[in-house]
Length: 385
Image (cartoon, rainbow, N blue to C red; front, side):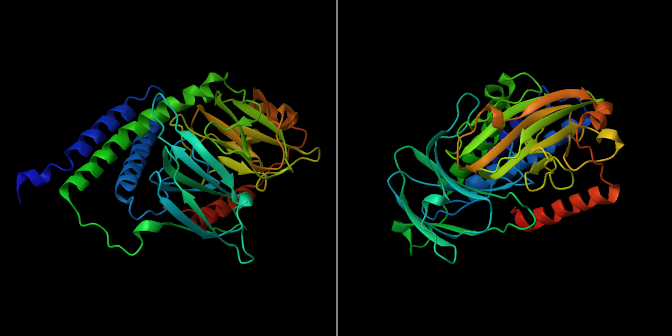
């Protein structure tokens, strides 16, 4: 074996070293736990970069699941399964599937990619209400990639983790069916390592910068009124923000339960602009998982330790993060939302929460453990990796 054959991975080795420098010296690291989370985040970024560079072929497209509990990015939604397929301008594709029972199934075509100084453009976005779905849930549509199209993204979003089931989804390129894959070539492999290297460093830089365009333009502990999600779907609205709390403080978010959408949820994330552990901690809640008070309001308590020393149904755990991202989402809307539909936030001493919430109902340790057990089972059943 010649030494030349060992040069293919050099560009990726250099990119991993550069990415490690970015992560190890992130400006928001305060504790050793923060740094360890950074290295776990780095592992997910390496995994995604390799997957997106090597698990696809423009001649033989397929849907890739790049974002999940082991590969977190872009304040990933704990309630969503993400699928990406690369497309080529002017080429016709056939997308087939069987609709599951998730709250929302949406499609979006993106141009370009996110970077530290720009966002990808949304060229087309729709949900399955625009498809002709047969009685058995099957559907099919054809799509010719328009100028600038790079990626077809599909989101399957679950409101009730316990009962809603995944569907099936495939994509085909019409003009290359029946042809064998091209044999491996050194130049093509070298390009893929280069793509992985650029993707690795670029994605870390992009998601370090992205929240400063949006989340951190707002004061801490003051989420926005519902608005169109940057780069998002036409039937989706979101409220964005970030929290900054002392250990003895809580942020109480009050928001009306929306009956005019199939999906409504809240989540908190880390300064890595990624979801935190939503499997063994309660760091997100949908309207199906949350408790709505008799006045139609959902009141969420964000804090490090449970209010009153005992968990409540709508407690969101900060899991050691004194600061972090905050997002509320509404999807598959039947009407637009206004400020009155959005959240009202109040910071208060953690000790005051039991007396200041109008309907404070503690859970037993066994009841809260049952909620976490249900989350673990649902993630195991639903998520892909």
